[in-house]
Image 1 (cartoon, rainbow, N blue to C red):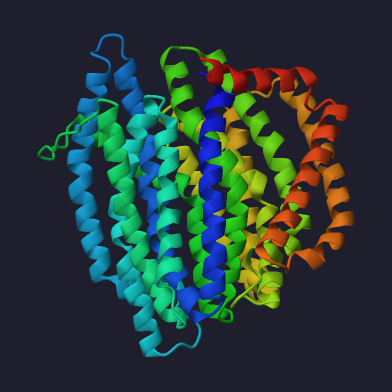
Image 2: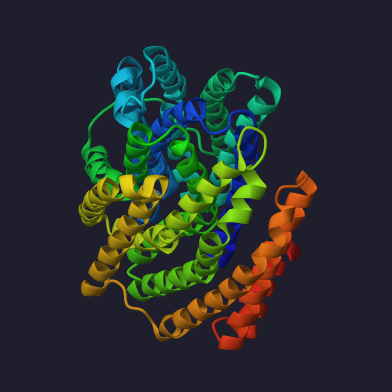
Length: 526
């Protein structure tokens, strides 16, 4: 399988989803602004997002995909029928668990919202009751997106990556429609309609994945739950993987709760908007790589191809840094024009955009770490080691909590993002060091030669962008078209300088470019 092609397919669809997400966030900023209503919705939305990362997309996929692939790839078995049999047994246990969890969260929505927000900062009982109501509206999304993860894991294992990667587009389209059709002069009503839209989008995503599975000849039957050996093994792998896969999400939840309880209203929104911008390269690069690497390395190791698995991880790391380093430099240095162009109108003031840019710079310091976690953890999960990542994730969460408490008051809304970035860097350092110590990862000569040159190319790009961004600032407050053109000039200039610098420094060769173009043309000709 072509790693670059598969990552590009997922990355392209994820990019489409993230662009729609930016449209959604721009409309949200316009109609809701930065205040209690926006903070209340974002805390409610954080709840299903957290559990999605912990128990659905992250933990379940990390445990399920390697086991499914081993069933399919077992030369003594029946192949795909064995894998689907295992999937049905997993579904039989997963579904009642999700129903019970959803019911409990609905019942205990008040204390859960209190933990996530610290009852906000000086709100009335009626306002907090509104925040609890929003949480109850978003909780069903957890069950729906977990079932989506099961179907998506099967399709990913069958190399139908694009179907699952396209599902989040439905979330953004649903919320955009809710903003355009059901916005109100009262931001509280608009926030409520967004919360309803979250669960509606979960139902649409599940319908899409079920349809795609049937098109692929996969139809899962409902069975009575039974804790056989395989299901017990799956459950044993899921729980430690939950913290490992969701370390960044847990850190963001801690940041959100502290910001909601200790800082002025709107701070949660600044952190959220900054994180959304930071998530754009993470979604485009990290999720695509992680999705492709896990089943690929699992099959290579299952076939005894240790050298192939090592090569796959080296190229994954190289591709991650090739795309991540320039994004990091651009977001740290040019957050002001980006935030102003995307969010700075309507109820979202220029001051709100400035504070968002500050939080973005802090988040983006850790962008390489957020993405390298996605590249390194498949090396553990493919070997069915979910204990080591969870141990390191726990350490990083403790680091995040300590730094949050130390930085949030002196740095205000910049403190939590900076703490998250540092904690993620600690996590990556531990993951990398252990893989190397075990002999399960060794950087090859090509990677060692190219990484410093990629860093220099990114710095060269940063100098040019820093010098020229002042020329664009007058245009980022204009009409939609003017804003778009200003950002297009910024991105194009940065990409051109980075690409030329990388070629001149030898970080990216002409042969690489020709190979990339041939691979892109190849599918279109077949």
